[in-house]
Image (cartoon, rainbow over all chains, first blue to last red):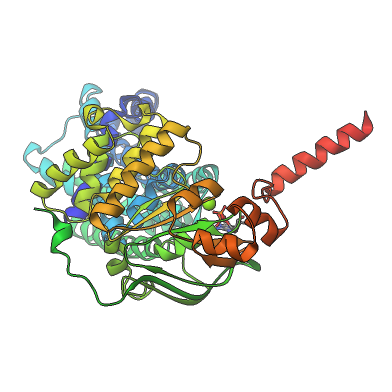
Length: 248
Length: 278
Ligand SMILES: Nc1ncnc2c1ncn2[C@@H]1O[C@H](COP(=O)(O)OP(=O)(O)O)[C@@H](O)[C@H]1O
Ligand SMILES: [Mg+2]
């Protein structure tokens, strides 16, 4: 247990010590909020009726969590390169606990990033409907974060070079992002796109988060929670398995 | 109170015992049927040129790599069957750095102590004691990335000793360090061996280091142990004055004529090629 805690703490400390990274990774979500919010706002309002920023903000919060979480897998590659991975792997700590510690660390960082984006979105005019359910938003943010940190870890277990990792992750998370309903509603899309969205775990995360923040679920918040929790669990197990086979 | 005094002596005299160990990477044989034993409290050296298989052996003994064949016992346990038992028994200083450079010296020690489940009280005492020993206590709150190579190596040694290991593995511990730092580091390590009975297993390609420090030496070349014994024995058997000559007489080469890597060989060929053309 202590080992999980200390590996978690290490990641939080490293995150807080790299201010440049915090600010740098806020750039993209803020740009999206700004450009899409103002650019597509009028179109959305004509087509759907309603305030686009209300629709968009939960999607962009999810996006920042998705990117931060998945890319945090690259820290395993850094640890491999700088040798610290060896120090952890010779310690009398089970591989599963190591994997859990770093996944929780990466996920916490991603949730913090998502929370910062949430506060910025208020500046762009986002008004969450139910303030008292905000803690529930953290549950969905946490589940998205855990799922995709574990996915990043799993990928980092078999791709050892940084460039390769970035290429694969980009290749994977771009469609996950675009077909999740983060930017546009999925219910009126062509059947094939709708199908892709329905097998995309992030769709349920985004829908859950949006429901909690502004209401109006498409899929049912119970389904969202169940799907996200199951996917998080499966990917954690998969990542744990891959991580336990790592050799130096 | 010192934890070392509380350890009961275990009956088996050999703390490391390796029998017919082989490691293949695809079809390249990095270690070829090596057999050796290290006694409790002994200072044992693996001496060999670059690429001989020294680091690979250490990685297998310390549970980082799986052997292809052979049996290993470390402090009574098989690293493949009971890795945690084995992990608790040793400390290690790797050939390449393994510190978290974004953390301070103190945090590196503290986190190690927690990973090895050392109680807070003992941890704090131990950190002060060991950082004092390697003369880094005053710099404990600095980030490791600002340390010199010698300071990092000293910190790694202090960290490796933190959890009262019975064995300390040192993979080329003094590589790339200046002579003063080298003798300072050996001073600390030998002190631990003398006063606490920590078994030392180190690798080196410095002949004089092996000769000066080790009680027993195994000379390894191309993944095979060519000969092992006390420095005196090795010199006697090869009828030579020092280990340097012993090595040449055994392998027909100077240890410094390193088994150059593929890229270096390419560069050398390229240089020859250029010379021929001009
Ligand atoms: N992961 C690996 N894959 C393939 N070959 C390797 C690997 N690790 C080491 N080797 C090869 O095994 C040989 C022994 O390497 P090593 O044990 O590092 O030598 P030493 O530490 O004695 O310099 C070298 O030829 C090296 O290139
Ligand atoms: Mg080596």
